[in-house]
Length: 170
Image (tube, rainbow, N blue to C red):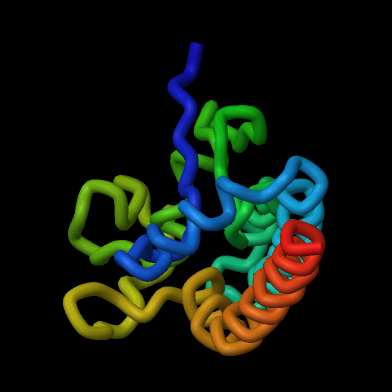
């Protein structure tokens, strides 16, 4: 059986976020469920944006097949999952096997870069960005969406905590 390979994209947990989680843990079940629904709503549109962005990737057929595995998760914080072992490509590779190469590419001389008879498994390595690479369709989309994700999640948390605080003190 193939090993499950998945990428889960989620927020960095800072001390402030950890303190917020403590507060969220104190909420009643109804408020927690409402927050999870709001977070899934946020990640739902982000997942659709990522799927659309795959059509603009250098090897778009491969990227759109991998993008079929993008799904929004129901959690307190917005996060999505990409990959897994189910979606199979020719040769037995899973979407999880291909997601990194499809997103960041590979060097032409690497083992994963080209087939022995010519042709390419992945696009050429994407441009450098900081310590890593720019990416082609997942991370550029997330960078553009980040301000909206943050704003919508912050509004949802604030509204839910305000309602909960009023209900507790009433």
